[in-house]
Length: 80
Image: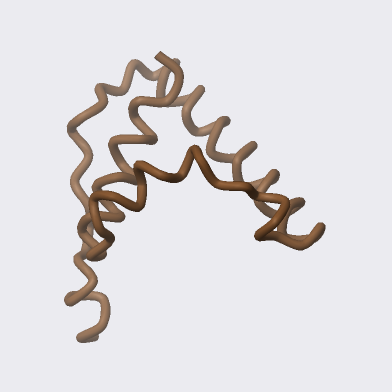
């Protein structure tokens, strides 16, 4: 049980923002080196490290996956 809390939260955020169901399924098949510069790859590595830290804290706090609700939908964000 590595990152169920994070997967639950970000999947729901993507769906609330109008992302298709299919795109997140393909994330693990991405070829990062062909899509990112060295700086972008470094930024991505740091973002992954931060997310991993949040996952570890959620596990330590015994957060229950499945309870997260996205704050806004894409329509709400664009009609400010």
